[in-house]
Length: 78
Image (cartoon, rainbow, N blue to C red; front, side, top):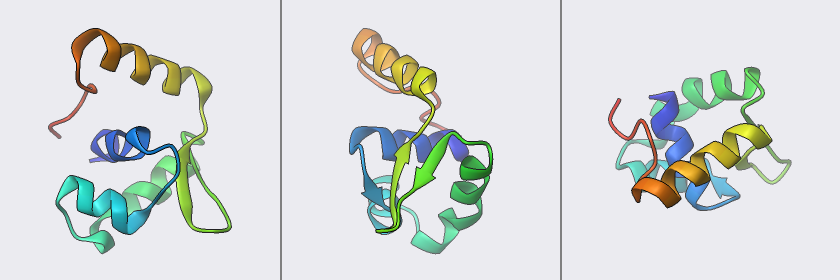
């Protein structure tokens, strides 16, 4: 589920948890532990305004490259 969460975050640079959930068609509460794990891995960050963004520049560049090349983000089905 973590990579699917990244897909939701990537498309809207800064995004709230409820909007990630809406984009992924899941309940907001079901994302909490996955988002926290991604934060602990320093792959994403959560601002004081509760907005999530990808914080690892190489990961962000790779996701963008994959999307530009294939028209979709990797790991869309987890």
